Length: 501
Ligand code: BGC
Image (cartoon, rainbow, N blue to C red; front, side, top):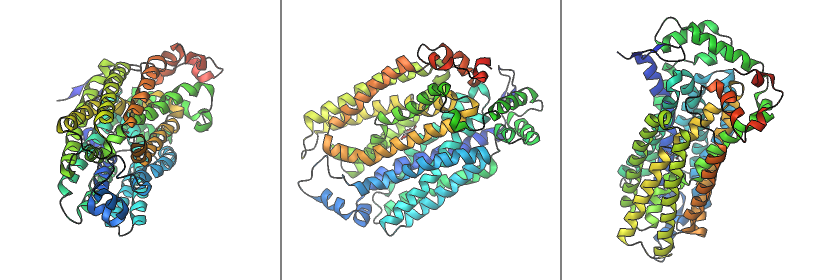
């Protein structure tokens, strides 16, 4: 069962071991997602606010509270965002560890930091302890988000690379959903509900820890470090067949070529690195400028803003979490058929309409002190579902997939680190600034995000080439050199690229 022969001459067979490797590694996504989903609910919980943010709690209780400003507090936002700041820095460190020590130890490091960080934040007695816990978790996320997508891409059989890479994003969405459910369940456990929510983050961390012991190192990483025999053994094991010489040879050649480049970061400054760098970084920046994390982090708060009570708003967050998971499946099955550009453009349209409509409803109906009429509040939740749905089959997974397939092997880990850290930086910005922006810009914040979506649509139309079905190592020849804008960057004296694959 499950034996298959595939194009590109590299045969393989599904084995239980390889499936276990995919799933265990993708638990890195679960960890990341759990954190995204848990923070918003926790920052809306009264017991948590009373303990660490009494001023915010008082403002929230005030009879004449201002809808848009009740949670605006830099420290409260720092609770959510501090994690991304440390993830940003650690993703560069992770790229080094990935290259020198391998993907497997990087995943192990990721789980350990996350484990210690989540235990510390759950047991915290002081605000600084919570923040340090989050910083440690951030190191875990930085290592995980660098190593896991690379790991998955490298152990995936060529023709399923897209779908297997998206497994990471799928588990991110599952993590967010589980976190929303946990918050829903702990909301009424006083006074320690928030501690349970934060503490349960150790479960995905433990899964990843176990995973990092069981999974294999990738053949590419072994061969990159001259461990050829081990590389061959691992390749046999993950492909489920004896004769892996053809694929082994291809990996050896790619690694030998990559070794000619001694300083990947210097290589990234060269003219021919501009196209992948711009695409890799902008995909991640734009992913965040859709405003997705305004919804993911702050959905419960957002729904309280429009008038839901605490549990109503958490329930809406759960519904959104479900929409997020199921819509990601569309991408798993569609990305290699429909293509990247179509998915991204369709989503721009759907996201633009839903964000703008949310903005208009709130501008017209929500003043500083009223609550939305029930019908309008439900419409806002429905529009948010439409928004999340389109994000989930497009900019969500493709924000990770495209940067991972855009760089040539010699700059792949370094280039990917730039993409990951751009994601983390902009996630940090949104996490840190969103509640203040909501307070100052009020409902116009949604119009602000729609504006970005227009820019993104132009970016896709004019700058983003289609990479569907193009083998990774042929991207320079088949994509960049043919693109009306990017080909100008490719006609340089770089021998390796001129010679082609
Ligand atoms: C993004 C996260 C986002 C999540 C939502 C991921 O791809 O990087 O920032 O919260 O998708 O599902």
